[in-house]
Image 1: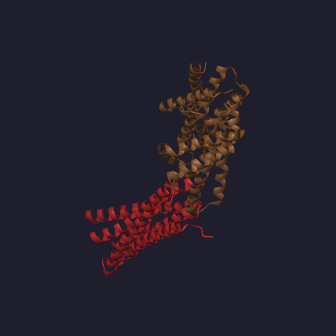
Image 2: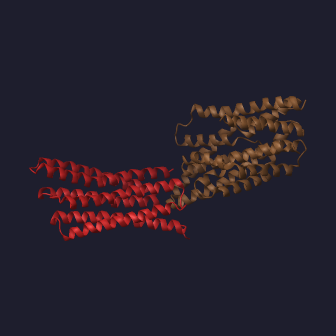
Image 3: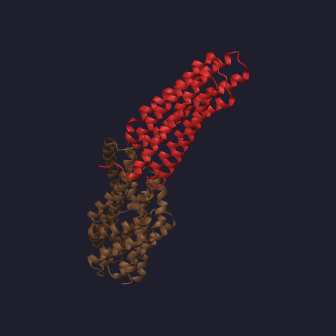
Amino acid sequence: MQLFFSKKHRLMEMINSYLQKASECVDIFLKAFLIYLDKQDCQEFQELVDRINQVEAEADELRRETEITLYEKALIPESRGDILGVLESVDKIPNKAQSVILQIDTECLFIPEHFKEDFRQLADINSQTIGDITQAVQAVFNNIKEVRKFTAEIGIKERASDAIERRLIRKVFQSAAPLGEKILLKELVIEMGNISDRAEDTGDQLNVIAAKRII
Amino acid sequence: MIRLVAGIFLGWILGVNDTAKTLGAAVSTQMISYRSASLFTAGFAIIGALVGGGAGIRTLSSLTTQTSSSAFVACLAAAITIAALTALHLPVSTSHAVVGGILGIGLLYGQMDWGALEKVVICWLLTPFAGAIIGGISFIVLGRILFLVNPHFLKYDQLMRVSLCLVGCYSAYSMGANNVANATGLFFKAGMLTFYQATLIGGISIALGSLTFSRGVMQTMFSRILLMNAFSAFILLLSEALTLHIFALIGVPVSISQAAVGAVLGIALVQNFRLISLNTLYQILLGWLLTPSLAFVISLALGRSVLI
């Protein structure tokens, strides 16, 4: 027996495609950043900068199409508002990932060797949150009771990211680097940490949606 | 037969005011258009009046003797009461107004069946409590079932939209069954209409109200309905409809608004929300006291000048 009308099945496919694009964006961010840490600005890094711009634009296009489909009298206003809010919120994550890579590219940041391991950990923990967000969003649709399990994971990673950020910023300002370099590195740390912050905001929104549905 | 206009007018007011409380939620969820909602409400109200309106007509007929003139006076008094209280933005019930009008006629003629009136008043007092109990129990039972079934988000959405449509139709049926007596019950007692004519004309007058001027009221109700989630709105409508249907079977026209207030309180109590405010109690008390009292006074005054 077909579970969905065709319009709703198409809607689910569009949402899943969008989540895949958003994940791909964050994966490219992590790959590009690790390459930059190893090789600084190089051909491979530049290709990944172009790729992240392309994927982020594709994600935006998918999101807009999904939002239009939402408004084609598909859902009750409450459900429509919830899904729209989630899409807009999730979109901030790949946006931030792209923004960090562009910041590194345009500012030609120099990351000293003794900070690289902390930066690797920071990038890794922040990029993991998109996986939890994807699972949490899918849980909203398929099994709403599981949402909190995934959003709790995001909270753990966000707190871990905060700890790395504080440690790294302290190290930066205790180093002998010039003030300008310190400030640029601090900004990079904060911007990267914002990825998990935005993921946590999305997680909070998903928790509210779940709470409304669980009677 | 011109006097029948007062009863048809009352039925029309019912249709205008109460359509939004039936399929308004289905319209707000974009399940059906306003036009379709009006047509469905009109259709199911007529069916409700024809199938389930008999007991209410018999009860109102038994309260006192009626002539065509006294039936006209009672209905006119009720219509004036409704218009005045609506203009003052005070709670008003057509059922309470009609009985207040009948009471005025009954005292004027010195022939009132106090036993039947007692039954009516007890049912009025029980209406919000019945709404609360049915609302609370429905919320718990159906909520538990939904929790265990745990449907897909989009399937839940579709389920809510279809449910709101179905319960809206049931609500329209209950509205017709419960309220047809208000429109034409007195004229049946006066011998102007047969039983079948009373249910049919009463049902059609309610349907006309639904088809003509209910859009404005429905749009006002939209914002209130949208403040509730879909499941709570469904429980509210189901409780309203069940309460009206039960009292239609008992044979007493009751207030749909009081049934709704009771249902909201029942849902709030289950969720531990503090919604029992002084304002809510004031609204219920006012509904019980003001409408029938005002209709009684107007009916008595009109009756003295017209009938005696």
